[in-house]
Image 1 (cartoon, one colour):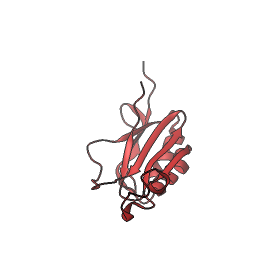
Image 2: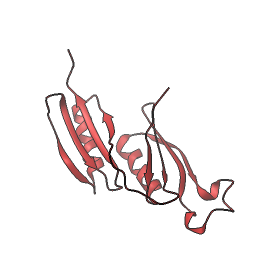
Image 3: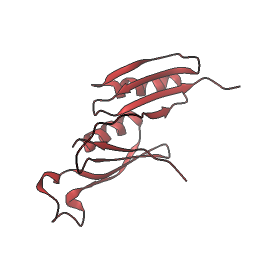
Length: 136
């Protein structure tokens, strides 16, 4: 069993996934829009160009998402956590995700991490970037 985050967006899923592909160094392997599905002829006009399913693979981990097909609600009550092994890479990823977003905790050393910070990106998604100290 694997657990994968599935993020919802307010019409900007494609741009968000292109941004994540650049920031996280992954690869978009699916970007399925409404007009590319069997429901294309039945979908309301406002769904044209909207992403029904996106899939990004980063170092063997899958991040998925879509544009909210019904009523969009801003994310809340969770963070997508990135566990990064290298402090320099954690800093890079944090600063790239922060571009146009809102830093909620600057990346810094904590009692459990060499580097840790939180940010809500420009697409409204909450992230935690964590580079843990060696345990033991």
